[in-house]
Image (cartoon, rainbow, N blue to C red; front, top):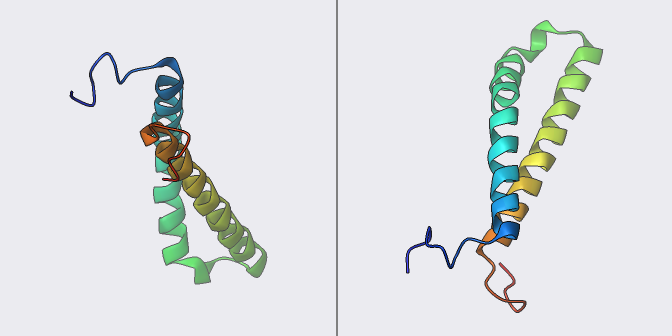
Length: 82
């Protein structure tokens, strides 16, 4: 049975998939712009550098959370640890 079959679709997985998709789309422009700023971080003040680095840490944490939520979609039983 294909991954997109009716049997595989359920409201919970749909909700999780929508969240992952929307968060990825919302974050992408900021991730790309942050990368640009980090490439030339030396042109910023020490305070701005600290803010950019902290923002980078927060973005990484959000990306990890999205990965964990994405893994929930693939769980098929309560025994899955993926």
